[in-house]
Every structure is written in C-alpha cells, then in structure tokens.
Image (cartoon, rainbow, N blue to C red; front, side, top):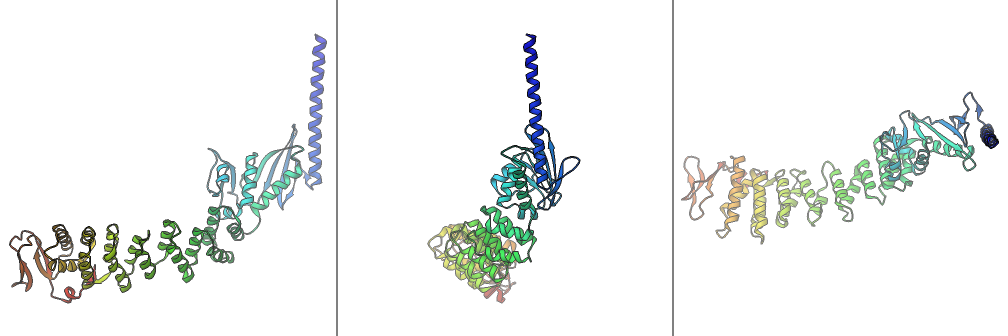
Amino acid sequence: MILGFLLAALSLGALWRLRRLTQVGALRAARVEALTLGLAPSRRGFSGALAGRPLRLTFTLSAPTRVEIELDLEAPTNFSARAAGLLAQRQLLALDPVFDLHVWVTGPEDWLRGRLDVSTRFALRRWIERGGRVEAGALRGARVLDKSTPLTSLLHEIEGLARGLCEGETPARLLDNLQRDPIPEVRRACLKQLTLAHPRHAETREALALALRSDDALIRLIAARAQGGPDGRAALAALALDPRLDPATRHAALRALKPAPPIPLLSTLSSRGDPLADAAIEALGDHPQRPEAQAVLLEALLRVDAHAVEPICEALTRQAISVEALELRLARRLRGPDEAITRAVVEALGARGGPTSALALARLRRGMDRAATPRLARALDQALDALLARYPEALGGLSFSTENKEDGGLSLTPLAGALSPQRSSSEHQTRLSSKPSSSSSSGSGSA
C-alpha cells in the first residue's frame, strides 16, 4: 500500500514537472517569436511599435501561455469601449444594432462617427467579445497564445483594429462611410456630422453633391437642408411633392423651406387632397398680403372638407383680404350642397376671424335668403356675436338684431347717423361701430 502511494506521488510529480516544462517551453517560444517580430525585451516583457504606435506585451507563465497587451492608439483620451452591461457607460450609439448590443463606447462623436466604419466595428466588437477593452485611448486586454492563435496572428489582428481606429482625417472617413456603409442610419449620421462639424470642407461639398442624388429620401432631406440656396430649395420642394414618400419626411421637407414655402408648391399640395394639405394651408398664412396666397385660400373655402376648415380660416386671419372677396366666397359657400361644411366655415371664422370676417359675415347675414335653415342662421348669429365681442368697432356703427327674423328693416339712427334694422323682438342686439368709411365697402384688414 505504501509502495502504491509512493508510485502515485512520483507519477504526479513527473506530470507536474512535465507540465512546467511545457509551460516554460511555450513561454520561451512566445518570447522568441516576439524577438523575431522586432520587439525589444523590457523589465516586464517586451515593447516596441505596432502600426507606428507604442506596444507593450507581458507574458504569463501558464498553460496555455497568456499575454497581456497594451497598445497606445494616440486617440482621444476619453475614448473607451467595453462590453455592454450595467457598469458600462454608453455615450454614443453607433446605429449598428449588432454592435450596439455588444459594445458601449464613449468619446467625441465627430471622431467616433468617422472611425466606426463597418470593418472597424466588426474588429472592435470581436476584440471586446474576447475579453479586450479600450481605456483612455489605449487597447488593453489578455489573450491566450496557442497553435490556433500565435502571437503573429494576434498582433496582425490588433494592428488592423488600430489602423481602423486611428488612420485618416475625420472628414475623409465620414465621406467614405457615407458612400460605403451598408446601414442607412449610419450613412445619415455621417452626413449630418459632416454638415454640422465640417461645413466648409471639400469632403462636405462632395458629400452633399452625392447625397442629393441618393436613393435614400432622408439623406436627400439632410443634404437639401444643408445645401441651401436654389438647389437646396428645389430638392426640398421635390421631396415635399413626392407622394411615394412617407408624410413625415415630406412634412419635414415642407417645414425646412424657410422663411416660407413657395406659393405654387403650397397651392398644389392644398388642392389635391394631399396628406400635407393642412400643413400647406397653414403655411399659406405665412405669406401676408400676397394676392396669390389669398386667392388659393379663398378658393379653398369652396372645396374644403369639414376637417380642413379651421386651418383655412386661421390662415385667412393673417392675410389682408378684401371684404368683397371674402363675402363672395362665403356667398358661394352658402349655395353649396353641404350645409354642415358651410356651418363649419362660419363657426371657424367666428372663432378665429378678424374685422374683415365680421364685415363679410354681417353683409352675408343681412342679405341671406329667408329660406336659410335655422341652424345656419344661428351659426351666423353666433359667429357675429363672437367677432363683435372681440372687435366692437368692426362694422362702423351699423347695428342690427339677430333674434327675430319675421320682421324688421333698415332705418337711419338719428344720433349716430347709421343704419339700424328694427326688429320687434330685439332682446339680443349686435352693435357694430359706425364708420361709413371705405373699410366697410372695400375694406381690407385681417380676415
């Protein structure tokens, strides 16, 4: 029994010595390989340069041999990358779903957008997944050396990652990503970064010229906004008119046409049942005292659907429209087949109109056919009440009753010298100030 114990101990000792010799042999082989690669021995391992950047290697006696790697990237010191997790800090999304799921990065956005191209994202993700990290602008990590991963192969991998992270000027890298990256969100972010951080670079001018011809509508939108001038406005107008695009993109293009979109574009959008019709009508109000815009809005009153009444009336309030023009359109609207829409127009003018609306509605109310429905007459009365509460001087001294429609007539008021309808039941009187001036006959002012 004792003999068996001794034999077992001797066997274990022999195995340990064999393992130790194997570890020492592997370590010596790694050191020899490091020497052949031109690395110089140092107190803690080997040092040298890789891709023109300082490299330090520290070997550990183990089975298999491990090597600690540190490579200064000469990158921004706040650049770091770690495996995604609770303790990792994320500052920037690379907009690559697979990369962002595994790696969290921090650092200057401009620098990172240019460096994180598709091949560098793959190399950095593989480095992180194998236990590596980036801290304070340096690659750090420990890797196992064996027959499948010799030191030469490991250094080649690190060199490729270092070159991807550090080489090239940022504008040129951003332009290259715009042209080559397979992920649309990455291409858009690179174009946006070029326009924001490098607006006067030659690469930015080249990028804008390419982007305006892109198949990606959002890239064209970014480029058109940044381009400005006639070319940029033409590109924005084309985006706003394109019915194949989603309404959000078209609406963004319309809003980008500052200070106001061209009237022909707005007229087209407002007249064809377009999803942007309401936005176009609202934008027409941003062209004050422009006869072309007024004509589009007034004609829109004749064909408008109920849901679009309020935007038209709100836009009309910002226009200096003649009373006669508004009264004419309202009279034609009253003769239309859909009384519900007509009431909606009247109610919207009452809620949002101005002195011109009051004059036009008052004239319309006085000349309205007795066959008009009570609901429409009541809507006109209520709209006038609301307008006159806000603009008591709107009608220049003309007063009339809005209660009894059975009798009543026009007469001169001796004291004010104004016309006044006499009605038998006149509990509710609407008073309008008296200026027999040109404002009530040809007047212009806000609608």
